[in-house]
Length: 277
Image (tube, rainbow, N blue to C red):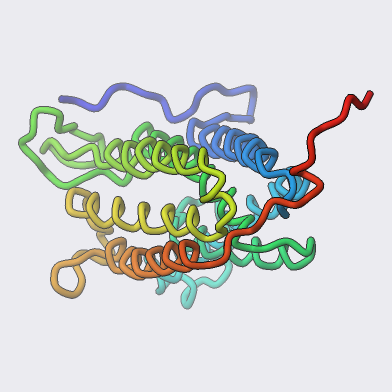
């Protein structure tokens, strides 16, 4: 089927244009931020608190943007930085890497947690549980922009993308939205309902990292490789090579969280609430 006629620009006011991609980032960050605050309030005796999560939003945005851009340049366009170093900061020209953004947020979380005397893994658990929200909207925006499409296919739901040639292709952006966004969110949502897991920092982060790595590795079999890189060792793609260490690291975090001593509920929070005004 033909790609639906969707304008990447939602609306324009003079020289100011609101694009679906920018709106997806905004909605993803705000919705994830509010959800993480809600999760923090379910375990009020642990740090980070809901106020810490509130303050972390700016750090998360900066870490995502800087890490995502650096990751894209280093992993997917290494020649650009050498030929034109200033291209690294020209974010408006496009090009972001999830793996780089993840690394940027991880650094931001470690620094922020130390500054607030909070456990970095407890903070990352809250962010990890909310991250699939942003991933879902981001992949939908990729589809609207007709970018990062899949390989040629003869399946009935194949899409003829405007810049993808005459052949139908896998709508791999929607595959990723379903796996990295919806499915991973549901799995993490179920796990956050259990206090025993919330009190073992590292498990939720490990499930997210492993889940994303597995989802991305599988979807890469249907996604068109980046033209400047093509297929790499053993026919893999850059996305698959970057996902393999995520799967291993995520499994390690799950095991660490399972076997570590759970954070006990404090006596203050365990006491029954009074009739305060």
